[in-house]
Amino acid sequence: MQPPFPAARSSPARCAPRPVDTMADWHPKQWITLLALSFSVFMISLDVTVVSVALPAIQRELGLSLASLQWVVSAYSLSFGALLIAGGTLADHYGRRRVFSIGLVVFSLASAACGLAHSGAGLNAARMVQGVGAALMSSSSMALVASAFPGRDRASAYGVWGASLGLGLAFGPMLGGYITVHWGWHWVFLVNAPIGALILSAVLKTVVEAKDPLARRFDLFGLLSFSSGIALLIYALNSGDKLGWSSPRELALLALASGLLLAFVLIERGQERPLFDLRLFALPTFVGVSIVPLAASTGYWALFIYLPWYFDRVLQLAPAQAGITMLPYTLPMLIMPPLAARLSRVMAPQHQFFLGLLMIALGDMALAHAIDGGGALMWPLLLAGVGAGSINAQISSVAVSVVPVERAGMASGISATMRQIGYALAIAGLGVVLVSQFAHALDSAMAQRPEFAGIDTHQLMEAFETGRPLPGFGASDDLTQRLSQLVVASFVQGMRAMLWTAAAVSAVGALLALKLIRSNEVAA
Image (cartoon, rainbow, N blue to C red; front, side, top):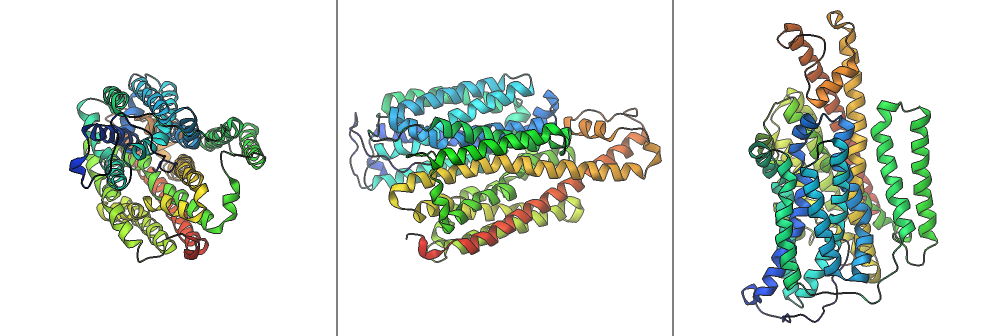
């Protein structure tokens, strides 16, 4: 998750920053500024992963279907991704500290609303607003760090700031599991509110306002057509099984989503200063770099919503145990980026991306074998985690190196947006595979078991998804136990199909990265 805008020009400071030799010589106000901004991106990255292990508890308490559960994650990623570049434009025009502060207030209040939600609709609406706040914060924070730390101090400040991103991604599931067990899932969200208040107090006291007087005009129609088209596409994917893929309503949703995305392309082509400069996609290397986050989202990030579901429904792990089980999957996000940076000095970017995506694909395939009783989960999770960690920090770096320096901010913004939108689309797409294969396996198994005749498989799936008792028999009946085993086995078949699909997408992405990215087009 890399904010989309390059370093901002320095502004006069209340306590003027000065080049120094060591971090120990930084002024206290610089430290407070850095810690406040670092904590803010820690909260943002934490919110990507901390919610994952709380999802089964949320689903059980609110009675959510799988489609509604997907929106708990997708709503946040959708609004976050859609507004990243727009947030940067607003920050440049109206002031980065002002936009950051507004984003922080929105994020904190929306977090409180998430924690107080009593329905799936209320939670998903609050999550979408939370994503808006995250986008405004993320698009401003890196530029504010640049303003506070000039010259050679900046690299050290970016190191602290970047490490906070890795910490949030790495320890989110474990922290989320602990909070869910001891305080309840509501506090996964509520904890952001007091932290946000402390950060806001520090920012208003120490962070200096900075603007860009030459900031480009805000592209409202481009933003609306893009975000609406993507939202409708995700809604159509989530609703396909329920409505029927060939139903008039489903086809109308897909047609409307396609129309809005086509309108977005036409709007951007006619803009002097577009939200997305689509001419960048005429560069094969930029196309290749843009494919990498889409493939990684499918093979790695989207599994954050489905693996905890497997841990809860099949392995019956408590949230804290699930968070610990996911450590091999998430810790490489903290450990691998420095190693990957060193590797990039001796390995071409296309080879590095190919290797990382291939590791994700192999990890997914091994995981598909392991969940069917074929071995331990740790090694497949670690393999996929190392693959994702080795490329995560490199994506934006290579994206901005492909384009002219004056388009670097745009390139970084598109790359960051592709990550978030790709994440939301991958959740929806893999959900289609999981549900359809789950239903197919359950229908086939039920047809061979006459003792279960007359039981509606859709009711069985809905009960399994929401954690309610299975219909048809008494809770202690032997037939109920056998029925439960049948449903779990069918769900595992759906998970296997989903993992093989994720592996295939990652493998195709690896091959496309190898073919499209050219070393001689990437600036050193």
